[in-house]
Image (tube, rainbow, N blue to C red; front, side, top):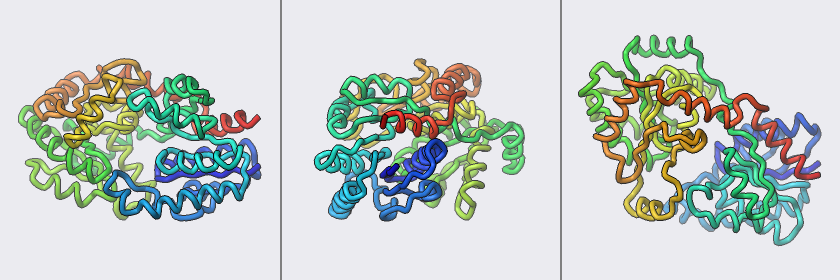
Length: 384
C-alpha cells in the first residue's frame, strides 16, 4: 500500500505521527511519501521539504511568501500524482492542504482524506460544501462534527481528540512542582496568554490587569505562566511591569519531554487557570483544572467574526459537554473587571466545572481506543 500524507505545522505532525503509527500497526509495510515533521519521520516519512516552510499564520506573514507557497502547492500536488498513492491524507493547514487536494482531484481519482474538520459549526458554514468537491473523507476530532460533513456527501468519522492520549501529571508531580517553585500551599493561578506573538501582545496586558484586581482581593496568590519557546522573550517583556512577577516556565534548553512534563505538572498544580481561547481548554479539562477563558482580537476581526459566529460560546469544554460551565469573556467582553470577578468566583467554587470537564474527556474518547489508531482504522475502512 502507498500513502501520501501532508502536514503543515507541529500540531499536524503530532496527529500525523500518531496516525502513521496506527497505520503501521494495522498494516505493516506501507510506503509513505509527503511532507511532515519529526514525529512523522519517526514513522517512516522522508519529508519532501521542511515542514516549517508551511507554518505561517495571518495575511501579513503569508503575503511575502505567497509565490513560494504557491510553488510548494504545485510541487506537492505533482508529487502525489507521480506517486499514485492509494490515498492522499492531508492534515489540518487547510489553506495549503485543500489546494493540493484540488489539483490532485482535477487530474486523478485518488482518494482524499482530510484530518481535522473545519469548524463550520461555528462560522463560515460554506467551507464544508467547498471542501466536499475535493475531499472524500474527513477525520473529525469532535463528536458533534460528522453530521456537518456528511450533509455535503463526505464520509466523516469521529476518531477522538489527541488530548485524551496525552499524559496527565499525578498529584505527586503537582506537589513536587509546587515545592520546586516555592509555591507551597498558596493558591496558584495559571496564566496562559497564548503561544503566538499576536496573542501574547494583545492578551498579556489584559491578563496582567486582571491579575492586579485578583491580587487586591487575594494577595496570597502565586502566578505561573508557561511560555511557548518562540515567545519567551516577549512574555518576559510583557510581564515586566506586573506588580507580582509571574513564575515563567521557560522551555529553552530543556528537552521536549522535560518541557512537556513541567507544563503538565503546572496544569495539575494550579487551582485556577486564566487562558486564551483554544484547545488549551481541553488540556486544562484533562488535568481537571477549573478555568476562565478570555480572548480578544483587533477591532476589524472582532466585528467581522461577531457577525459570522453561529454559536454562543467558543470554549470547547462548553461545546463538547453541552453546558456553559466555563465562564468566557470574548471580544468586547474581555474586560479585566469582569474576568477578575470570574476568577475569584472560580477559586471560591473550584468544583463547579468538574462534571463538564469530565464529560468532555469522556465524549472525546478518554476510555476508547487511541485516537491515532482509530484514525488509521477509519482510513483503511474507507478504502474498502
